[in-house]
Length: 146
Image (cartoon, rainbow, N blue to C red):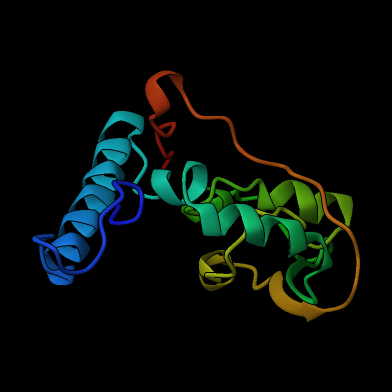
C-alpha cells in the first residue's frame, strides 16, 4: 500500500505503523466481505490469496497426502461433509487414489471423523486431480444430512 501510493519515509509521510495498520485493515475487510458474500469462511484463502496461487503449483508433487482404504470404507460420506475445502474425499477412496486435490490443506479433519478408520496419511509421489464438491447457489454449502 505504501509503495503503491508512491509514499516514502520522511517528508511528511505518515509513520510506517499507520500504513501497516491501514493495509492490514483493508486486507482483513476484504477477507470478511468475501466470507460473507460467498458464505465460506475460507473464501479469501481459496480465491484471492496470492500465497495460495504459488502453493498450488507444487501441490501435485506433495509427498504427504491422505489415502483411503477401499475395503474399510463404508461410504458414509462423513469425511466429505466435514472437509472445509469441499474435497470429495470419498470419490478418491472409491478410485483407489490418494487425495490429490491442490485444495487439501492436510487439516486431517476427514481422518479424525471417519467412523471406519479408513483414512490415513500416506507418503509417496503421484500426481493429482481436482475432485471438489459443488456449492449450492449463492455459495452456501449444501445442508448436511444427519
